Image 1 (tube, one colour):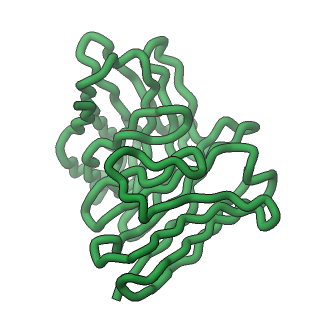
Image 2 (image 1 turned 135 degrees about the vertical axis):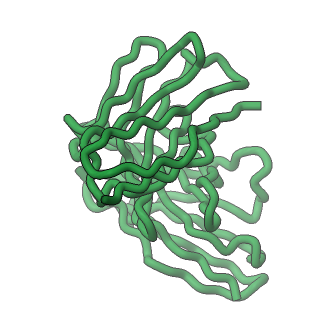
Length: 117
Length: 112
């Protein structure tokens, strides 16, 4: 079955970059783009961007331009999302989700990222 | 950019029908499909409605979606409410001009 498995929780000090992985299985990886979404504690869902898994092209939400980098490794069917110089307000659960015609299905299980000094 | 506005909370009794609205601030609601996601505490979201009114396999037919151009809004209706339907629900669409995804702020559904 289609499955997205994300890396484990991270605790980082402000300024130390954090990288989250999302490994896909059960389908042809390069045939679907991948989204990243985050959810701060007690808050709603926030779209971060999307990566074209075949070509590697990315589109980022305006808010994250210059701070977030999305990459992929087609040999392992894995996408990565890195936040550079994270701040305490980047503390959130980060999700990957497969793109099917601008909808999200399925979602990864989520990765808790905590940024604290 | 447009904004999708949802009520903060909706409360209804078991067996009754609950409706959650999602109003688009500018541009036509019919311009881009609307999806609805259910998120239970501590879990990732799952799709309950896609492309305005389609249900993924495994989602009960108690869940239905619609779009109303006159109010420029989409709605998620859950009939025959069960306690297991208690969750946060998010609408989502796409901005064709900015190429960005837009989420509504979410609605907490309480079934009591």
